[in-house]
Length: 338
Ligand code: SF4
Ligand code: SF4
Image 1 (cartoon, rainbow, N blue to C red):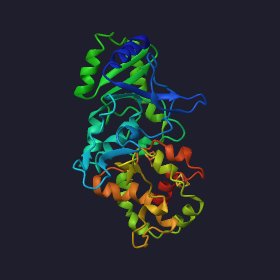
Image 2 (image 1 turned 90 degrees about the vertical axis):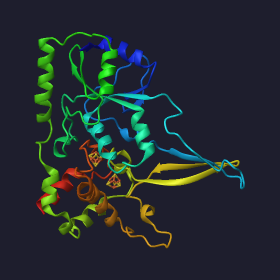
Image 3 (image 1 turned 45 degrees about the vertical axis):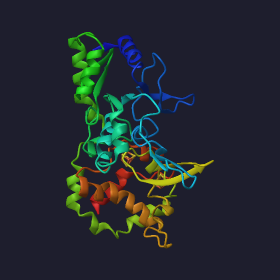
Protein backbone atom coordinates (compact mmCIF):
# COMPACT_ATOMS: atom_id res chain seq x y z
CA UNK A 1 0.00 0.00 0.00
CA UNK A 2 1.41 3.38 -1.00
CA UNK A 3 -0.30 6.63 -0.08
CA UNK A 4 -0.48 9.26 -2.84
CA UNK A 5 2.74 10.97 -1.73
CA UNK A 6 4.52 7.59 -1.56
CA UNK A 7 3.27 6.73 -5.04
CA UNK A 8 4.53 10.07 -6.39
CA UNK A 9 7.94 9.46 -4.77
CA UNK A 10 8.07 6.00 -6.29
CA UNK A 11 7.31 7.36 -9.78
CA UNK A 12 9.94 10.06 -9.23
CA UNK A 13 12.48 7.34 -8.49
CA UNK A 14 11.42 5.23 -11.46
CA UNK A 15 11.89 8.25 -13.72
CA UNK A 16 15.63 7.49 -13.49
CA UNK A 17 15.07 4.25 -15.42
CA UNK A 18 11.94 4.96 -17.44
CA UNK A 19 10.09 7.56 -19.45
CA UNK A 20 6.77 7.73 -17.63
CA UNK A 21 3.46 8.09 -19.48
CA UNK A 22 -0.13 8.04 -18.32
CA UNK A 23 -3.59 9.44 -18.99
CA UNK A 24 -3.49 13.23 -18.68
CA UNK A 25 -6.05 15.92 -19.53
CA UNK A 26 -5.15 18.70 -21.96
CA UNK A 27 -6.39 22.27 -21.56
CA UNK A 28 -9.67 21.30 -23.25
CA UNK A 29 -10.20 18.49 -20.74
CA UNK A 30 -9.49 15.72 -23.26
CA UNK A 31 -7.66 12.86 -21.58
CA UNK A 32 -4.98 11.18 -23.65
CA UNK A 33 -1.67 9.34 -23.21
CA UNK A 34 1.01 11.89 -22.40
CA UNK A 35 4.38 12.04 -20.69
CA UNK A 36 3.83 12.68 -16.97
CA UNK A 37 5.89 15.42 -15.37
CA UNK A 38 7.68 14.84 -12.10
CA UNK A 39 5.19 14.30 -9.29
CA UNK A 40 2.22 13.94 -11.66
CA UNK A 41 -0.27 11.12 -11.09
CA UNK A 42 -2.40 9.60 -13.87
CA UNK A 43 -5.83 11.09 -14.48
CA UNK A 44 -8.30 8.79 -12.75
CA UNK A 45 -11.61 9.80 -14.28
CA UNK A 46 -13.61 6.74 -15.42
CA UNK A 47 -13.14 5.38 -18.91
CA UNK A 48 -10.20 5.06 -21.26
CA UNK A 49 -7.98 7.82 -22.71
CA UNK A 50 -8.92 9.13 -26.16
CA UNK A 51 -6.12 7.43 -28.12
CA UNK A 52 -5.13 3.81 -28.32
CA UNK A 53 -2.52 2.21 -26.08
CA UNK A 54 -1.22 0.41 -29.19
CA UNK A 55 0.86 3.51 -29.85
CA UNK A 56 3.42 2.19 -27.32
CA UNK A 57 3.76 -1.23 -29.00
CA UNK A 58 2.92 -0.44 -32.58
CA UNK A 59 4.03 3.20 -32.92
CA UNK A 60 2.66 5.46 -35.59
CA UNK A 61 4.88 5.57 -37.63
CA UNK A 62 7.55 2.92 -36.98
CA UNK A 63 10.88 2.80 -38.83
CA UNK A 64 11.64 -0.78 -39.89
CA UNK A 65 14.96 -0.14 -41.59
CA UNK A 66 17.10 2.61 -43.01
CA UNK A 67 18.81 2.47 -46.36
CA UNK A 68 21.08 4.37 -48.61
CA UNK A 69 19.17 5.65 -51.59
CA UNK A 70 22.39 6.15 -53.58
CA UNK A 71 22.99 3.26 -56.00
CA UNK A 72 26.12 1.18 -55.39
CA UNK A 73 26.66 2.11 -51.72
CA UNK A 74 27.61 -0.79 -49.44
CA UNK A 75 25.49 -0.11 -46.37
CA UNK A 76 22.36 -0.51 -48.44
CA UNK A 77 20.06 -1.78 -45.65
CA UNK A 78 20.47 -1.04 -41.94
CA UNK A 79 17.86 -2.81 -39.81
CA UNK A 80 16.31 -0.48 -37.25
CA UNK A 81 16.45 -1.64 -33.63
CA UNK A 82 13.16 -0.64 -32.00
CA UNK A 83 13.22 1.23 -28.70
CA UNK A 84 16.75 2.59 -29.19
CA UNK A 85 15.70 6.23 -29.47
CA UNK A 86 14.32 6.48 -25.95
CA UNK A 87 14.61 4.96 -22.47
CA UNK A 88 12.35 2.01 -21.58
CA UNK A 89 8.84 3.22 -20.89
CA UNK A 90 6.52 2.84 -17.97
CA UNK A 91 2.84 3.48 -18.58
CA UNK A 92 0.80 4.05 -15.47
CA UNK A 93 -2.98 4.29 -15.09
CA UNK A 94 -3.68 1.64 -17.75
CA UNK A 95 -7.25 0.34 -17.63
CA UNK A 96 -7.55 -3.48 -17.67
CA UNK A 97 -9.29 -3.50 -21.09
CA UNK A 98 -6.35 -1.67 -22.67
CA UNK A 99 -3.81 -4.00 -21.06
CA UNK A 100 -5.74 -6.99 -22.38
CA UNK A 101 -5.60 -5.57 -25.91
CA UNK A 102 -1.80 -5.92 -25.83
CA UNK A 103 -2.16 -9.66 -25.16
CA UNK A 104 -4.61 -9.98 -28.05
CA UNK A 105 -2.39 -8.05 -30.47
CA UNK A 106 0.57 -10.25 -29.55
CA UNK A 107 -1.29 -13.17 -31.20
CA UNK A 108 -1.18 -11.99 -34.83
CA UNK A 109 2.18 -10.31 -34.12
CA UNK A 110 3.68 -13.51 -32.75
CA UNK A 111 6.60 -13.37 -35.21
CA UNK A 112 6.98 -9.61 -35.33
CA UNK A 113 10.31 -8.64 -33.71
CA UNK A 114 9.36 -4.94 -33.58
CA UNK A 115 6.18 -5.55 -31.60
CA UNK A 116 7.96 -7.90 -29.18
CA UNK A 117 10.93 -5.60 -28.65
CA UNK A 118 8.58 -2.72 -27.91
CA UNK A 119 6.67 -4.96 -25.52
CA UNK A 120 9.84 -5.82 -23.62
CA UNK A 121 10.61 -2.13 -23.32
CA UNK A 122 7.26 -1.11 -21.84
CA UNK A 123 6.09 -1.78 -18.28
CA UNK A 124 2.35 -1.47 -17.65
CA UNK A 125 0.92 -0.40 -14.30
CA UNK A 126 -2.83 -0.82 -14.36
CA UNK A 127 -5.54 1.08 -12.57
CA UNK A 128 -8.54 -0.99 -11.52
CA UNK A 129 -11.86 0.54 -12.55
CA UNK A 130 -14.11 1.54 -9.67
CA UNK A 131 -16.93 1.80 -12.19
CA UNK A 132 -17.48 1.52 -15.91
CA UNK A 133 -18.74 4.36 -18.06
CA UNK A 134 -21.68 4.37 -20.45
CA UNK A 135 -19.65 3.05 -23.40
CA UNK A 136 -17.69 0.30 -21.57
CA UNK A 137 -18.54 -3.39 -22.09
CA UNK A 138 -15.41 -5.40 -21.21
CA UNK A 139 -17.70 -7.89 -19.42
CA UNK A 140 -19.02 -9.05 -22.80
CA UNK A 141 -15.66 -9.69 -24.36
CA UNK A 142 -13.85 -11.81 -21.74
CA UNK A 143 -12.37 -8.94 -19.70
CA UNK A 144 -13.05 -7.47 -16.29
CA UNK A 145 -12.72 -3.99 -14.70
CA UNK A 146 -10.22 -5.56 -12.30
CA UNK A 147 -8.55 -7.90 -14.83
CA UNK A 148 -4.77 -8.30 -14.80
CA UNK A 149 -4.03 -9.78 -18.27
CA UNK A 150 -1.19 -7.88 -19.93
CA UNK A 151 -0.30 -5.89 -16.81
CA UNK A 152 2.87 -5.95 -14.71
CA UNK A 153 1.16 -4.43 -11.68
CA UNK A 154 -2.48 -3.64 -10.92
CA UNK A 155 -3.11 -0.64 -8.65
CA UNK A 156 -6.40 -0.46 -6.76
CA UNK A 157 -7.35 3.17 -6.02
CA UNK A 158 -8.41 3.46 -2.37
CA UNK A 159 -9.06 6.66 -0.40
CA UNK A 160 -5.50 7.07 0.90
CA UNK A 161 -3.63 5.98 -2.24
CA UNK A 162 -3.09 2.69 -4.05
CA UNK A 163 -2.91 -0.95 -3.08
CA UNK A 164 -0.46 -2.58 -5.50
CA UNK A 165 -0.88 -6.12 -6.76
CA UNK A 166 2.20 -7.39 -8.64
CA UNK A 167 1.24 -9.52 -11.63
CA UNK A 168 4.56 -10.39 -13.32
CA UNK A 169 8.07 -10.92 -11.94
CA UNK A 170 9.05 -7.62 -13.46
CA UNK A 171 6.13 -6.01 -11.63
CA UNK A 172 7.08 -7.72 -8.37
CA UNK A 173 10.63 -6.39 -8.49
CA UNK A 174 9.35 -2.88 -9.19
CA UNK A 175 6.95 -3.09 -6.24
CA UNK A 176 9.90 -4.28 -4.17
CA UNK A 177 11.81 -1.17 -5.25
CA UNK A 178 9.05 1.00 -3.76
CA UNK A 179 10.38 0.03 -0.31
CA UNK A 180 8.35 -1.46 2.49
CA UNK A 181 5.36 0.93 2.11
CA UNK A 182 2.56 0.37 4.59
CA UNK A 183 0.32 -2.57 5.04
CA UNK A 184 -3.17 -1.81 3.81
CA UNK A 185 -5.50 -1.31 6.75
CA UNK A 186 -8.60 -3.43 7.22
CA UNK A 187 -10.70 -0.52 5.92
CA UNK A 188 -8.52 -0.26 2.79
CA UNK A 189 -8.75 -3.97 2.11
CA UNK A 190 -12.52 -3.63 2.45
CA UNK A 191 -12.42 -0.82 -0.14
CA UNK A 192 -10.41 -3.08 -2.44
CA UNK A 193 -12.92 -5.91 -2.05
CA UNK A 194 -15.72 -3.45 -2.79
CA UNK A 195 -14.03 -2.43 -6.04
CA UNK A 196 -13.69 -6.10 -6.96
CA UNK A 197 -17.28 -6.92 -6.22
CA UNK A 198 -19.07 -3.70 -7.25
CA UNK A 199 -17.18 -2.56 -10.36
CA UNK A 200 -18.48 -5.41 -12.58
CA UNK A 201 -22.07 -4.58 -11.62
CA UNK A 202 -21.62 -1.03 -13.03
CA UNK A 203 -21.07 -2.62 -16.47
CA UNK A 204 -23.37 -4.58 -18.79
CA UNK A 205 -24.12 -8.03 -17.43
CA UNK A 206 -21.31 -10.51 -18.13
CA UNK A 207 -21.97 -12.70 -21.15
CA UNK A 208 -19.97 -15.41 -22.86
CA UNK A 209 -20.12 -13.60 -26.16
CA UNK A 210 -17.42 -15.52 -28.06
CA UNK A 211 -19.13 -18.97 -27.76
CA UNK A 212 -22.55 -17.43 -28.40
CA UNK A 213 -21.33 -15.86 -31.63
CA UNK A 214 -19.60 -19.09 -32.60
CA UNK A 215 -22.84 -21.02 -32.13
CA UNK A 216 -24.64 -18.43 -34.21
CA UNK A 217 -22.56 -19.31 -37.29
CA UNK A 218 -21.96 -15.77 -38.52
CA UNK A 219 -21.28 -16.87 -42.09
CA UNK A 220 -25.02 -17.52 -42.43
CA UNK A 221 -25.46 -13.79 -41.83
CA UNK A 222 -22.86 -12.77 -44.43
CA UNK A 223 -25.54 -11.52 -46.82
CA UNK A 224 -28.01 -10.28 -44.18
CA UNK A 225 -29.70 -6.99 -45.20
CA UNK A 226 -28.66 -5.14 -42.04
CA UNK A 227 -25.06 -4.82 -43.31
CA UNK A 228 -26.33 -2.54 -46.06
CA UNK A 229 -28.41 -0.45 -43.63
CA UNK A 230 -25.43 -0.15 -41.31
CA UNK A 231 -23.01 0.85 -44.03
CA UNK A 232 -25.40 3.49 -45.44
CA UNK A 233 -24.58 5.72 -42.48
CA UNK A 234 -20.83 4.96 -42.26
CA UNK A 235 -18.61 7.63 -43.82
CA UNK A 236 -15.50 5.38 -43.88
CA UNK A 237 -13.53 7.91 -41.85
CA UNK A 238 -11.46 5.18 -40.12
CA UNK A 239 -11.82 6.77 -36.66
CA UNK A 240 -13.04 3.48 -35.18
CA UNK A 241 -10.04 1.51 -36.40
CA UNK A 242 -7.42 4.13 -35.53
CA UNK A 243 -8.72 4.51 -31.98
CA UNK A 244 -9.27 0.79 -31.51
CA UNK A 245 -6.55 -0.87 -29.40
CA UNK A 246 -7.09 -4.23 -31.12
CA UNK A 247 -7.00 -3.04 -34.76
CA UNK A 248 -3.52 -3.68 -36.06
CA UNK A 249 -3.54 -3.31 -39.87
CA UNK A 250 -0.69 -1.40 -41.44
CA UNK A 251 0.85 -0.18 -44.66
CA UNK A 252 4.56 0.06 -45.44
CA UNK A 253 6.13 2.90 -47.40
CA UNK A 254 9.65 3.90 -48.37
CA UNK A 255 10.59 7.55 -47.91
CA UNK A 256 13.81 9.08 -49.19
CA UNK A 257 15.47 12.41 -48.55
CA UNK A 258 18.89 13.54 -49.82
CA UNK A 259 20.23 10.07 -50.52
CA UNK A 260 18.93 8.50 -47.28
CA UNK A 261 15.83 6.40 -46.96
CA UNK A 262 13.60 4.85 -44.32
CA UNK A 263 11.13 2.00 -44.64
CA UNK A 264 8.22 2.97 -42.41
CA UNK A 265 5.20 1.11 -41.11
CA UNK A 266 2.05 3.19 -40.71
CA UNK A 267 -1.35 2.35 -39.26
CA UNK A 268 -3.86 1.63 -41.99
CA UNK A 269 -7.56 0.89 -41.90
CA UNK A 270 -9.77 -1.73 -43.53
CA UNK A 271 -12.40 1.02 -43.71
CA UNK A 272 -10.42 2.82 -46.44
CA UNK A 273 -11.10 1.79 -50.07
CA UNK A 274 -7.37 1.87 -50.97
CA UNK A 275 -6.51 -0.67 -48.26
CA UNK A 276 -7.45 -3.66 -50.42
CA UNK A 277 -6.86 -2.16 -53.86
CA UNK A 278 -4.76 -4.59 -55.93
CA UNK A 279 -2.08 -3.46 -58.37
CA UNK A 280 -4.31 -4.87 -61.14
CA UNK A 281 -6.99 -2.32 -60.26
CA UNK A 282 -9.30 -4.97 -58.81
CA UNK A 283 -10.62 -4.23 -55.33
CA UNK A 284 -12.20 -7.15 -53.45
CA UNK A 285 -13.73 -4.70 -50.97
CA UNK A 286 -14.53 -1.91 -53.36
CA UNK A 287 -17.99 -1.22 -51.90
CA UNK A 288 -18.49 0.34 -48.51
CA UNK A 289 -20.83 -2.40 -47.32
CA UNK A 290 -18.02 -4.96 -47.76
CA UNK A 291 -15.61 -2.89 -45.71
CA UNK A 292 -18.07 -2.27 -42.88
CA UNK A 293 -19.01 -5.97 -42.79
CA UNK A 294 -15.34 -6.94 -42.77
CA UNK A 295 -14.57 -4.78 -39.72
CA UNK A 296 -17.20 -6.54 -37.64
CA UNK A 297 -16.62 -10.00 -39.11
CA UNK A 298 -12.90 -9.69 -38.42
CA UNK A 299 -13.47 -8.82 -34.77
CA UNK A 300 -16.31 -11.22 -34.10
CA UNK A 301 -15.60 -14.18 -36.38
CA UNK A 302 -12.29 -14.36 -38.28
CA UNK A 303 -9.99 -13.42 -35.38
CA UNK A 304 -11.71 -15.71 -32.82
CA UNK A 305 -11.72 -18.54 -35.34
CA UNK A 306 -7.97 -18.23 -35.69
CA UNK A 307 -6.88 -17.22 -32.19
CA UNK A 308 -9.76 -17.93 -29.76
CA UNK A 309 -10.86 -14.63 -28.17
CA UNK A 310 -12.82 -11.84 -29.86
CA UNK A 311 -10.70 -9.04 -31.30
CA UNK A 312 -12.43 -6.49 -29.09
CA UNK A 313 -11.85 -5.64 -25.43
CA UNK A 314 -15.01 -3.58 -24.96
CA UNK A 315 -13.17 -0.31 -24.33
CA UNK A 316 -15.95 1.60 -26.08
CA UNK A 317 -13.70 4.04 -28.00
CA UNK A 318 -15.37 3.28 -31.34
CA UNK A 319 -18.79 3.78 -29.74
CA UNK A 320 -17.73 7.06 -28.14
CA UNK A 321 -16.13 8.64 -31.20
CA UNK A 322 -17.89 7.34 -34.31
CA UNK A 323 -19.25 10.53 -35.93
CA UNK A 324 -22.41 8.75 -37.08
CA UNK A 325 -23.01 6.76 -33.87
CA UNK A 326 -22.39 3.28 -35.18
CA UNK A 327 -22.34 1.16 -32.04
CA UNK A 328 -20.66 -2.27 -32.03
CA UNK A 329 -22.91 -3.32 -29.12
CA UNK A 330 -25.98 -2.80 -31.30
CA UNK A 331 -24.33 -4.73 -34.13
CA UNK A 332 -23.64 -7.61 -31.73
CA UNK A 333 -27.24 -7.59 -30.47
CA UNK A 334 -28.50 -7.50 -34.03
CA UNK A 335 -26.29 -10.47 -34.97
CA UNK A 336 -27.49 -12.44 -31.94
CA UNK A 337 -31.12 -11.61 -32.64
CA UNK A 338 -31.14 -12.35 -36.38
S1 SF4 B 1 -15.92 5.70 -37.07
FE1 SF4 B 1 -18.03 5.26 -37.73
S2 SF4 B 1 -18.24 6.42 -39.64
FE2 SF4 B 1 -16.04 6.30 -39.24
S3 SF4 B 1 -15.39 4.43 -40.35
FE3 SF4 B 1 -15.85 3.78 -38.26
S4 SF4 B 1 -18.00 3.10 -38.34
FE4 SF4 B 1 -17.64 4.33 -40.20
S1 SF4 C 1 -13.94 -2.56 -31.43
FE1 SF4 C 1 -14.44 -0.68 -30.30
S2 SF4 C 1 -14.95 -1.38 -28.23
FE2 SF4 C 1 -13.86 -3.08 -29.25
S3 SF4 C 1 -11.70 -2.78 -28.66
FE3 SF4 C 1 -12.02 -1.72 -30.64
S4 SF4 C 1 -12.49 0.42 -30.07
FE4 SF4 C 1 -12.74 -0.85 -28.21
